[in-house]
Image 1 (cartoon, rainbow, N blue to C red):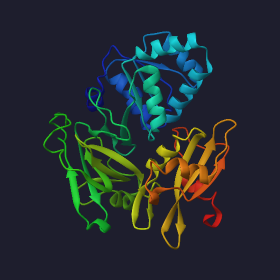
Image 2 (cartoon, rainbow, N blue to C red):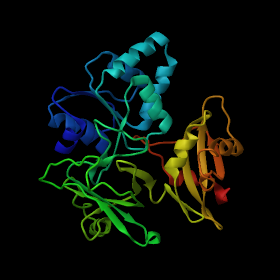
Image 3 (cartoon, helix red, strand yellow):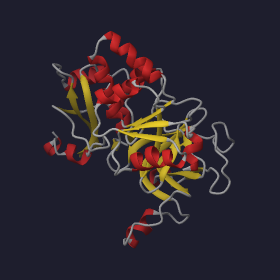
Length: 354
C-alpha cells in the first residue's frame, strides 16, 4: 500500500468513486485497500452506469476515479449524448478531480486523447497482475506517455528477458527492493538503455508466494533468480525510458515473416478509423508467413467497413508487414467485467484462416 500511496499521492482527504468489480486487484487493492490504508473515503456505485457516474461527479467532493478503457469510452459516449449546457457542467466537475487512473487493458489512443480534451486530465496508465500487484506506473507528476505503463514502482525489481531468437540476451532495469523505500524516477542512471522486446519479469515485496496446492505450476512461474514470468512482452524505450507492453506473448504477439508484431499497436491504429467503435487483432496461422494479421471490428452505428477501406486508412500509419490481411465485422466484441477480450475465441471467427 505504501508504494501506491506514495506514487499516486493518496491521503485521508481523498474520496474515490468506486465502480470497479471487487473480484480483481484493480478494484480490491488499487481502489479499495489504498483508500483504507490512507483513511480515505470510498463511495461505491454498482453496477457501472455512465449517467450515474457523471451525476455523482457533478455533486462534488470526489477526488479520484479508476476505471478500465471501456468505462471511459462509455462515459465519453454519454457525454456526447447530452446538451451543451450539461456538457459544460460535466467538464467542470471532472476537471475538479485530482486523478483519473486507467488500467486492466491498454487504453486506445482516441479514448485517451478525447478524455484529455473533455476533462483536462491525462489518464494515468499503470501495469500489474494478480500475482504481483502493481509493478509499473506512469508518474503522478510528469510525462504520462501514450502506450506506456511508465517505470517501476518503489520496491519493484523489473527486467526484460529477450527471446532465444535475440541470442538470449538478458537486460534488466532494477529499482530498490523492500526496506529502501527510495522511489525510482525517470532519469535515474539505472534507466538509460532501451531494451527488448522480451518477456517482462518482476520481483519485489508484493509478489505472491505460490499457487495454492500447485507446486509444479509455481516452480514454472519463476526463474532461477526469483523473478516472476509475467507472460507479457515489453520494451523499454524513449527518453526518459518508459516500459511499453506489447501484449500477452501467447495472443498479442504476432510472428509474421520474421517480424515480431504487437497486436495492441495495430488495434490502436484501427480505432482511429471513424467507422470503428471496437476492434481486436489476432494472429492466424499461415503456411508462408507463420502468422498473418487479422482484425475483428465492430462499427459505429450506421457505418460499414471493408478490408480494402481499412488497409487504405492504415497504410500511412502502419508498416506494410503490420497491415491487416483478414477482417471480420461483428455487431460487438464480447468482453469480461474488466474490459478484456478472449482472443482465442476471436480466432474461431476465421475458419481455416479465411
